[in-house]
Image 1 (tube, rainbow, N blue to C red):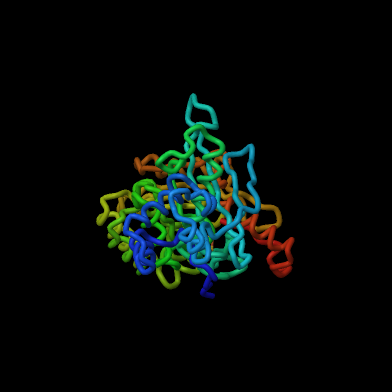
Image 2: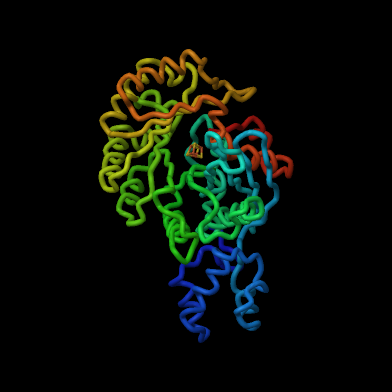
Length: 379
Ligand code: SF4
């Protein structure tokens, strides 16, 4: 399951680790910063572009490092609010990175806010019943370099599309670690990638604009709370009682609400930030008034924000999106108690539906997955 690349991904190196490797071959300390500036600020796509480095050094870099350890296979633009990048990793694995545009009022779509949804694993072991990413199981963890590489590919694309190209900052507004995989099951690589994304010498992207989403791995929620970086946390709750949650999320058996809710409280209190509770509404599964009332109580108790996401019905699957009336009825319970809440009314499932399908389709076309996976869909 552990993938060992033939060349180390440069996007997985920190300033300290790169400085150390360069020092071993007699390079001065400032060289690492120079190289990382080429990668993250000037967005160099090849070693030859790094014109202030000597030729022997560029040759050594080429022999030692993979500059960006992923190749863009497909850039699927939509009329909708999401675009998807399908990336191929060095072992042939496929991952999706999703760009979600949220148009701002009175401003054209091209100038809308952009949220990038990145993956942390190839597949997923958590087995949430509504999710395509998990149905084919876990293939492997991504390396830190592969997690960061997704954002660089988005930068290359955005640099070409928008006039604020090659800005010091990355040209998007938020990052959600909510794509394929359970981020906290790949904890070390995740934390290293976040450090690179956040660092001045890296993408320089503010931690407050990064949200890590988890299905509820309690020990690692508590570990993440201790990290100084201070990212935001979202919990895929999807059930307000153990009985309902257990039906759709096997993780609830190991970490039921009695364990999960105190961990969420600890995270929120440690960072002084509101945690988000994600709640995909599925007809006759978790859309009852009783669930709404329990969710209201949990949210009030934890001072959490609730993100209600109507399930996106997929042909051939048993799950359905509740009717508009049922959605409104559910939301009204939270609203009446002044719970901080968002209800996605249009194209509501895009973020969640975005990850997994393109990868599954391509792998099926390649014959990499068995026939059972043909019916997969995702969260
Ligand atoms: S919803 Fe998230 S945690 Fe659950 S199986 Fe899908 S990718 Fe894994």
